[in-house]
Image (tube, rainbow, N blue to C red; front, side, top):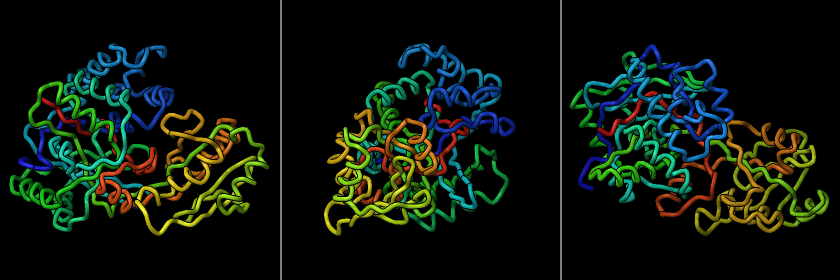
Length: 403
């Protein structure tokens, strides 16, 4: 790799006094209805840029030119009104998120798309062409990447020390979004920038945690624009500071089985016992199940050998239960299965079943960050919806302008 893994950039930031009004959840963690509700009374919400359908008629079709025109117009208004301001020179940024007594501090930078293409920025998920195309068109319309990829890197104490030193003074931005406090500091000194860039070159690899579609779209947009050395807006955190929650499953229907027949078939595949309270699995190869108003504990043995992907809980559940008993094929395509991020809690599973949106729900233990990195290092792909990172980065606090 001939260029730096991470490089400074002149960020387009939310002005300090507008940060709370601008900050928005990542564009892909809420439905259209939730996004419309979230912008009520918030004229500067960045959802007006990242989810421009909130300002258009509900019947506007996906991919309509009006969506990208609306995003660009909202972006231009925020810049014109001084809600978003451009930093005068290239720099790196320290980004800290605090929630529930926990903090994680990472480095915001322009990562190398050449490193992404070459495998030094590692992937573990497949992307959907329609979602990838949507974000590529969004980038082209704005001339900017507005949603950072959340990455992780193997812990490096020198990098951690350098980033921590940048956080000693008052931040450029501090705001609360939901239950998460976000703070952003500038790293402006040439020596500090060089030291951090060198440390990340030595670390050698980043692992995409959240943002596979954003990364692929950035590559596509750069190729279409003829950029020789494209960059990717990224915030990378030490792997020992991030938190992964379980990514749960809900299923509609029992594949023609009665509840009793389903439970009999299930008992032949895994251990099943009733539970008196909602089940948050306490370890690998343990699952919760909510069916017909009651929780159950499920257990099996985790294989001691074989590919890492095949030993993950999501794979075990698919291989033992979802496929053979419920006839769920490709979970990316089967309309009978849906996914509930761990941030919503296992109570959301019972609510989905009790409310008629699902017939049965399964809670899963979180995939470990070590397993995620092992899968990515092997060049393998995780099953869909395997990891839910919490907290999420906020959109709108800093963007990468491409010109």
